[in-house]
Image 1 (cartoon, rainbow, N blue to C red):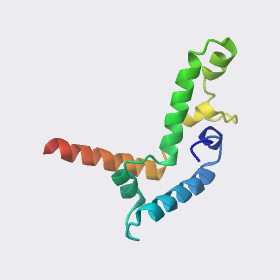
Image 2 (cartoon, rainbow, N blue to C red; image 1 turned 120 degrees about the vertical axis):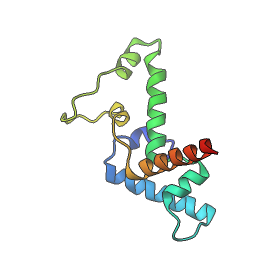
Image 3 (cartoon, rainbow, N blue to C red; image 1 turned 135 degrees about the vertical axis):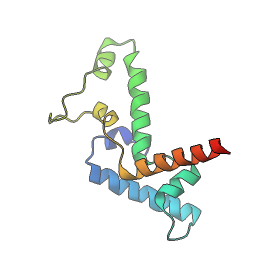
Image 4 (cartoon, rainbow, N blue to C red; image 1 turned 60 degrees about the vertical axis):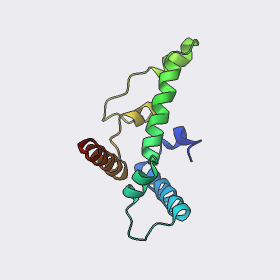
Length: 121
């Protein structure tokens, strides 16, 4: 799934949610947590990124490399301006602007709470 994440960045949010479900099931099979354990806690404890977070980080890394490419055509394609929000074009760069999905938001919130508790000690 991670190898083809630039392709998945163009998919509908429901398709990405289906891929996240597959990822969550494979993590659960590998670790064997209790049935009532939350996916956000599983991601936090294993220090694993959600699929959305991984795709966003990979896209940022890709575009940061391509902007400095010596070929002017490649750097021009990577440094385009995103269209307005109501525009019908979907380009990979738009994946950087999307808000995080629910699971990613919960994992990030959980990580911040854990960091604050560690700082207080």
